[in-house]
Image (cartoon, rainbow, N blue to C red; front, top):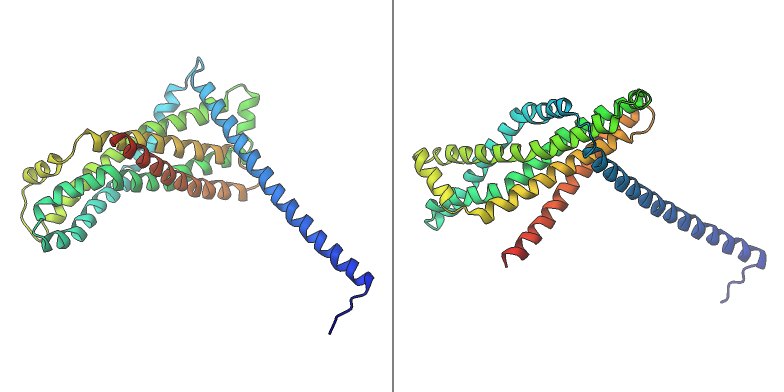
Length: 280
């Protein structure tokens, strides 16, 4: 049985589908345009950041103030995080090693795990949540209240004063926070080993560092500088380019945390691949 559709109705159906296809095409084109525009804005932002970094007047006092805010004020959170990392890793790994009679390998295993991967990544994610959101919210509120425009009018160079100092402070302080978290993680591991055993502090540390060499230490330190740069750039970019209205401050802080955390994981993946190729 054939279904006969009137010519007028067929034209209406064809026009309806054409409109839908054109709307989808327009939406995809708009998404691609927004992505390319945002990517170009990021490149220009980084280029301006580099240019302002090597300008004559570097805001040294503001740089040290941001180092204090990023580094010292993050110590309580990083202290708890680092200690718990080592403690939990030891408690979870000890029964498995005990089944194979390899409990003596526990200090070295924990130290390598913390220094190579767990310490930098978890500390980087914690810093992304605390530091990137703080930068995004602070600069976003300054953008909303037109303080940045006022600085530009008064020739204060807001990019140099607000962004450059924060990015370089994050690049310098986050690696130090990661090393601090690694050290506390090993101490937490020693505490976890003494919950069901009796291991001296000196013996535990000698066993922990006996299996560590520069190939474990240097890549972790190098990628931690990239973590700091990524967190600083994302937090400042989202805050510096926040929209109008109070809602944009929350959006800037939220998007800074999400994007910084994602980029930390991507940088870590790239660093692992590069390290693996260099070792081979």
